[in-house]
Length: 612
Picture 1 (cartoon, rainbow, N blue to C red):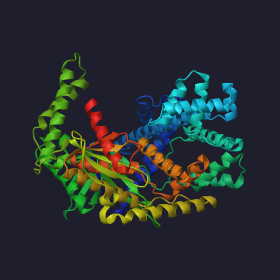
Picture 2 (cartoon, rainbow, N blue to C red):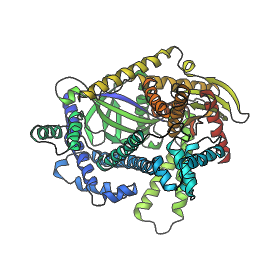
Picture 3 (cartoon, helix red, strand yellow):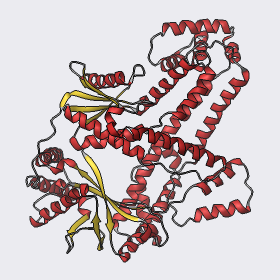
Picture 4 (cartoon, rainbow, N blue to C red):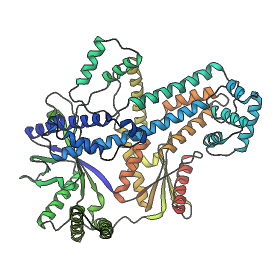
């Protein structure tokens, strides 16, 4: 996709800001809070949670009932629609997270079944430890050179029926696929086993108690919890911890945003001074001025021009070709004292398609939409006994198809011409968050390589600065946790800034070589790569002691760069979408240096593309 998001400040007089705040904070946010509770309290909710999806239209149905509630009357129709869509998105994301937690829990439970002491293994196999070790050595020899040895042995363990072989596989799995040189200590094993049991219990608690929460802007829940904690003794440690979590969590200060998913819900105009202004469907009496960065002003100017052209042509142009796709109103938290509509900043975020900026890009989208509508009309014409609504919808589609032939005036600029055989492999690791290799998929030749220092150039010192900030913040959080005080300090935006610099540099190099795609590793592979790097360093540092290696790995993880790889990949996506460069995912190899991994990443993606 070639969609990006731009934002601006919305400036208006105090009565206008107050009215919008009251609509969003006093009506829309409580409406969303109540809808979240209604869904969670539904009799079939547990069934939906197990299935991983809600019943179709259930949230729309519950939201329709709440719209008639006197507590939520007086909102524009778009506010209700936005609230319902937001709750759908919240539960969709929550259910996906629940599935991820459940898979993690299932994995921990399976690991708990495997994690048996040497004494238990001897008893189950009715043999001695030396025999088990000999069988384990044979298994290791037969799988020598296997890249993902643990996964291979785990699969073999699940399929194996022979008791001795299964026990030997169990012995290898619990010892990190190695033959330990020292006998197992009962106390250390008991501690290790207990840690897994605690992890299972914590995951079960997260799954059972982690329901989507609304935004309580009045702090009633915080005050209620404080009163209970002051006058009541907790029944157990869990209840005390729950109270503590609620009291230490910073309460929400701003209402839920309002989404406008139709590009004609926003009406653009200019005031007497030439300042761009906007009104929103359902709030035509509220007018806001646009204040934004000069780099983004051209987009808001384009939104206004598109709407004016359509209006002057008496609707002979289609809004399907508007540069604007959707908008969202939200408040951003500010500091100070006073009324919330004075303290907090009102912001408008707009999603747009960058291809609409040029004549060539608009023509490309127009053709896509025309083909889509034509295919739809063919399918509908094959049907008999169409309803009146279907006939009316077909007429609207036919009208849209005709209007697509009236293009908006756009500047001409050649489209980015990419070579499908040129790929940019982006390997990610622990000490080197990003290394790239430009590869020709046909010849398998590496055209150029760039490391972190070359990508960042004169901004490279920012990397160490961000590292120091992370360490300082980690230390401050640890001190606060020991004192049982507030420890949610937030994060500096320096990491986000470095990610943008990296993404921009990667796109610039890709553009230079006319790359057809950028290949990034899957997040799961990144975690495995980091773990492999740490394990390799631990083995070199402490060759003969598994326990000491684990301790060294833990300390090492705390000292080196902690990077948000998902955020970096998202920034690469955003920058690549502006040129229409395709983003591919591939498996990052565990072996080799960062440059070799980047090359192999790109080649794997190219081979996968050919075999698809």
